View 1 (cartoon, rainbow, N blue to C red):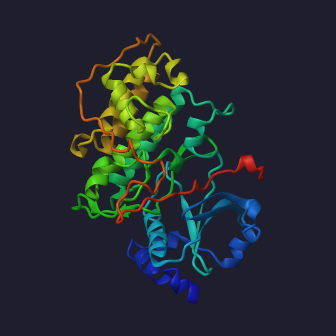
View 2: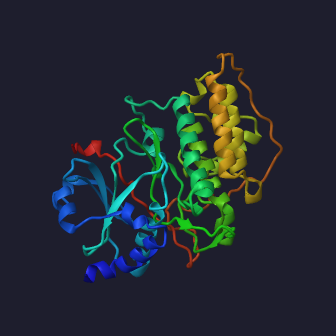
Length: 374
């Protein structure tokens, strides 16, 4: 009972009971169940580690494979984040969002139990060649549309609007059919219907962080849109969000991309697997959409529901295409190019004032094929 109360069990019960009885949908696991499932949290079962804790692969008595997230920090703020993640995930039901199966509050550190996502993160597939699942343009477009649909659901269709607040390719997982699953809601927030923004200490990941939020500490739904725009550019270019190797356009991928668009050199920065596709019209449309998502003025960015609809239209265009695509570049009027991250260290914690904090998140719920774990 001591650990249950310290880990926020009473607060969790209160939050869950206030969300239309969803406590019945979230299983409360016992310590014994999860110790048995993970072979007493055997090191060989570790899937990933990071600032928030460790994720283990486990098997429940009914044969289901799960991922067990074990926090490693016990301060009150981390307990609040844990309770926040549980409360948010009980509100979510979408095929492109990782499913929370339950939690355990009896242990010294709180535990979350998720569905197991076997095929790793989108980041891995973009930045490391994978012969088993090469990221063709068609697959990239499908994944982009799936992620946009998930974020649109969070913003517009969930019972209470939710801002994810850490959209990035390492928080997008691929399931057994390589469908996208948005994960990691530790820093997400439920938003009142009439609320337009959150005022918080800056939290997120360099390269994906909305410059407007960085400067004002006000996080809006358009901040998630900006981060998604960076993911779109990753899919287009195959480049990482921050790179010391980039000179022209800056270390920030967003700045580099905007510079290339305005210089009519989009196709020169595309990933070879994208550039070799004949779908030049669709590629250009996605690039234009990414450009709008990355506007420094949040009011000029589209809403996620609009982004999702546009990507679905582009997918339909591709499906109906007769293959006679023309290579077309886009001319842009010079706009607000940000060099916000240029001159900062790529270290997550650098370049911030003392009141800000950035998270270093693990890659949860993924397979660990490199470790040879079965």
